[in-house]
Length: 131
Image (cartoon, rainbow, N blue to C red; front, side):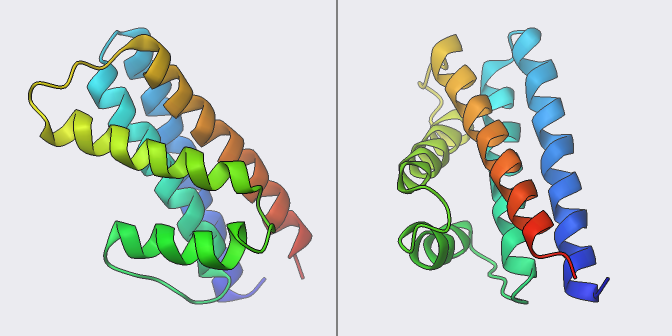
C-alpha cells in the first residue's frame, strides 16, 4: 500500500475513535461533548478521503468546502450528506462556542448518525481504491 492510502486508513481510524468517544459521551448525557466528538469524527473521515489525493487544509471550512465541491457535488458521495455535514458543523460550533446553546438528545443522535453514515461510506470508498 502506498503512503497516501496508509494516511487515509489512519485518519479513518481516528474518525472511528472519535465516533466511539461520542457514543460514550451520549450515553453519559454529555451532549455538547458528544456533538464535538461526532463532528471531529466526520472531519477525520472527510480527511481520510482527501488523503488519497494528498490534499489537506488547515481550516475546517476549507476541508468541508473542498469535499462538498469535489465529492458531494459530483455525487461520488450522496448530496444529502453535504447538508448533514453542514448541519453537523453548525451544531459543533454552537455546542463549543455558544454558552446559551442547549444540546438535545435528538440533535446529538443525528450528529452521531451522520458520523456513522459517513464512516461507512468512506470505508466503502477506500476499499474501492485499494491497490
